[in-house]
Length: 275
Image (cartoon, rainbow, N blue to C red; front, side, top):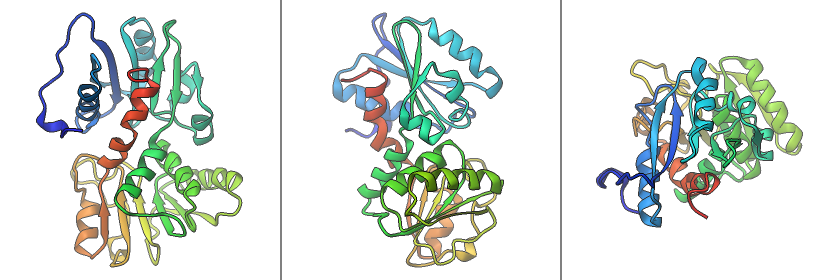
């Protein structure tokens, strides 16, 4: 696939199929560029448009999209993944288990069908960089939609131990309980977000901290060191403050874009853009 930032914008005609990505904020998203590169490669007459939607307008937005006959579906990102569960007409078993939706197909009758692909995208991105989670002790920071998907993917990838850290410990505990119910053999713990990485092998930031200037670091940098890998879900900036400090402390770092690149074909397929 050609590099998405070096290609011209897609040609739009009256026959072009429309897709979207819904987020708040929207400026950081990389999905349109990556999806358009796939569309060019596959000969798809389609365009994916960034749509800035605040949470209080999400339900009304979906009502409007249901009536667009040339609209094929959309990708949902921060902060909409959890709310999509109640707004979709149907969700896949994977989305139900994880408790969030990040990709929605609009059926010809206007019904919205949601699924969740973040977890498989993140895991395949790690594997593509040579990072194997099997047997590894992992600290996952966050307990929202993306974090839930990644937690299940890490468990399914045979992580050796999973610690979930979140500012609201109750949310971390709820996610840990759901993981334990599906993977009873995996040691899983819930802690506050001020817990350090300690002797863990892999640290994953699945929060939005690092997206905006001035955000605090999601983990105590003093607990990071050589022998650890530190991974992000944030795609812009490409090197977040967490990755920068992790690199300076001798950690192996993994940026957020591969998660999108690995799931982009699955997203296109779910929305019906490709078969």
